[in-house]
Length: 293
Length: 293
Image 1 (tube, chains in turn blue, yellow):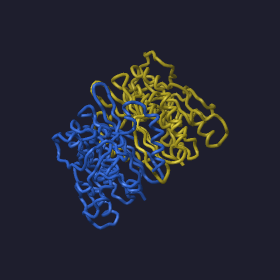
Image 2: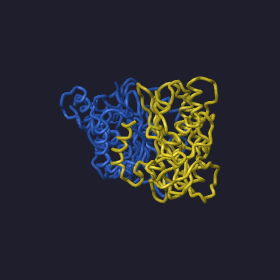
Image 3: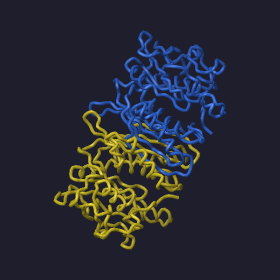
Image 4: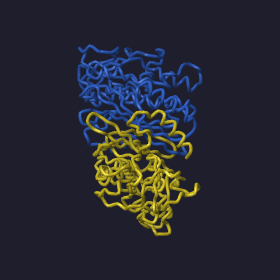
């Protein structure tokens, strides 16, 4: 993914407006009159973000859910969405799942664009929310001494993906239909020092909070709540798609939602992430590309 | 494109929020606190909206310009944009052209998403603007007795496309790098009864204003200013991509920008569009799909 990193570096030079937050965050934070809007765009590509034979109703749901999860991590209340849709099979299924997610999380569809295409399909959504708390939390506020928390178990999406891929018949619903934690995000926003949703793997995303904050994050892997068997613990910590909220807060803060303490923040030690106080070896994978091909 | 029309009908059932304007407009119009935002999303697909061997700097420019043109048709002042980018060749060229357009039209980049893909590339942009005049003009306000105007010549993009396709060396700049009429749109917004940008062909877009307004639009083809030779007149009136503004206004209004009167609005006659008072035959093409394949 070096191409992606280089490209984002080039974009960063363009994104000098304060609302862009240096492209360090999952969403733009835009002051409009007397309101603060959170605006995010996530795309899903056939063969990369979803399996070509997946039920399109699940793809429609997930497109909305992943965007809503970015709003959740900013404590935002959903306002509306624009859809970018490539024509192809199972349009009605797509609309069914999309509509179920938009209804459930109260995100009105406001517009978008529909295009034809003759390759893998691309879907995109721009979701707009209203900040419920300012300053809007970011990835970059973790301070030495803070505790690190996660809102729930990781690994369910991994097991769901494997069940779907291997057609075992086991429950795949948390991979197919993740739940954005809108309400938890809104309640947490006033109390956190840094926050993001876990989309690319808990360890990788923890390292991003550390890098953005200029600190090290020391994770105790055994303390992370798990939706998988113990022998899959490290796999589950490297998987994304669970859309739990990962955040840091002052140790003394009494949290308004259930969350598990999984580590602490310390001054930068030379490594963004530590595991039980140890620096992982340079080839230790923090996350992996789980759904391509 | 029936698949697209059916799909948009299904989406319309979801888009009940007033900001969606029933998906009849090119942009959503969202009240936020004491401001009115205009939000639009346009996508471009390789092989459909641009030629695979086109200079990627022109593709980057055009992506911004087409979105800005939707803002122009609402009289909006650009606020910011989110980019959806598929990785592939010539990233630097893309950024160069994108950045030139963003700078020239003062549209800050605020965020977006970058994806990998293994087929034709898709690019998308969500552009956000601030209404300079409320109520924000729409396609649906044309009234019988109004005059129909266009801000300038059509046909230049058609000639540019042909020059590029046939490698004649003739000027293709107005196809490659269209100019969104931001300032004209802002000046016109208080004076028009209906307005849109000409992206899919002047006759087709005029019929859309008529349909949205419940009137007929009577166009005098000979009065449309032309950037092509006279023998291409009807082709030029069916081509899009010139991004002129097409609008209706009371005949008595003194317009703040240069525009050509090209027809009149009358009560619905059974056909959305009339040519010199005559109903075109049902197989008369109003526009055509010009750039696919």
